[in-house]
Length: 409
Image 1 (cartoon, rainbow, N blue to C red):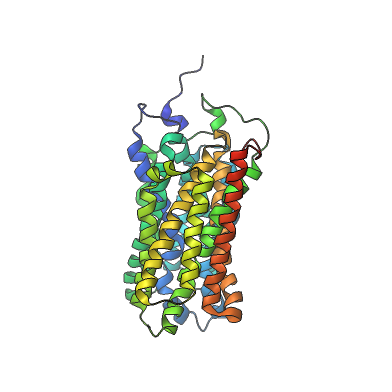
Image 2: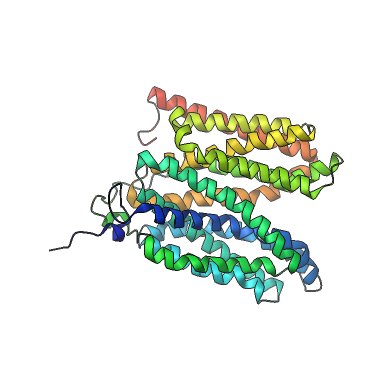
């Protein structure tokens, strides 16, 4: 006779069951910050890296890739990691991801060719795909629908505040030596014993006592409909760090501190609103909430395209940050409310792919549009994309109200 399953083994603990979920939640939120740390940490050291490798063949071309390659690797690896998380304990995927993360992320400490460091960044991206996917799926396992919106809001906030912290730490270490920021990637080693002690194993959902293998194929249409929000949000969001410093320079404000403060305010606003998402989600159904967030973002980007005075720019950072802070927890909560438990890993992988593919494609989009229409045109294009996304979710919400949408929507 089979023994009663241990909640710690299944990863499906609920309110009133052991082990306590708060330590596991804190650790998983810390793991979420590692996804932002992947790129943000070394950004301040790029000039030093470029100077060090300028004499190596291909050095000038490869240095920018150090920052962007992880995003592409994450987008490719995340769906595969999601499939793996649905077939093996999610904690195992998380631990493997952290181990690879530490080795590949710290490669700049001991490798001295730009090609090998770039290769290491590819593995770093793959590790982030595994970490973000398994962490999201474990959070979905630990908390039910009533709590999940609040918790996923905390996750989005942790990512925002983590990004601010790692950029600041990277800047301090980059002033000491260009290799300095790579040492930060050793920090996740401290998480491993806590993960082993507190995070549930998260066996595949069809092995859990209350879950059953889902009928039918993965709900691709439903998942894609939601991932439109994640992609459009981050695609437009990343036009700000890419072009805002140049816009302020054109306005006669050649201050890196001003540009950095504006971008930090954008990130901070996103994190603050994400913390309150547990209350915000009760105000409207998910498609309507998405359409309202993108409408605010569209108005913000359209006003930003006019290159307004600096106080208005800072106000727009708050507006766009708040809109962005709603989109991701709203999308992930909506997704997990419909996807069967046995498919949560795959769903998290597709969501992660959408986020990081958007980040990766934002740079070539800006490089293509800027020479033709200028910085104002870049932000007006972002406003147009956000407006189209608004209309898309208005149509989805109307179909849901009329009962014409597919049953799984």
